[in-house]
Length: 188
Image 1: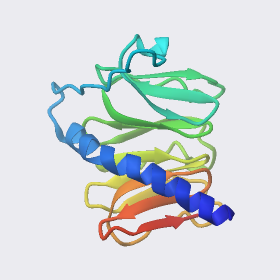
Image 2: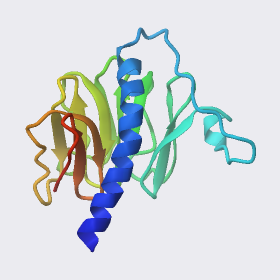
Image 3: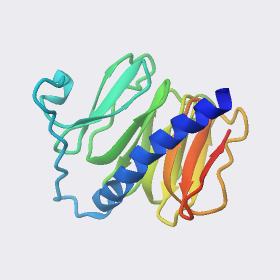
């Protein structure tokens, strides 16, 4: 039963991630002057004042939350014990919050992580990426060639598949990827 729930959770998250991955890929390859048009909340929906009435909440892990402002800067709020809610300056295409760390995908395709660095969870690899997703104690990034690279704590074998993927979702202590041939593959 627990495995079925985990797979269902991953499928739902991957469906959301897959629908957004093309937007993120375009945002990551656009000129820095390009702008993201965020989804506007419908009447009656809550808007977090930390986003100044605009932008989108991108990631929350239960203790801190981060969002992208319309100008592509990141705002975080909530717990900030190790700097996880203190984002760097600059423009980002995506942000993902782990338990005590956060990682962002800059508009040039590079990654930057901040906060607690236990087990290397804030040591983002070099190179270019099109997506990033933080789990509790680890993070995985989707490279431009469709491969996944993960870093941080590796409880149960966070070794990604060798098949190309087009979406990635970091769960608590596992990660799932939607492969280009359509199966969902989870590890960890």
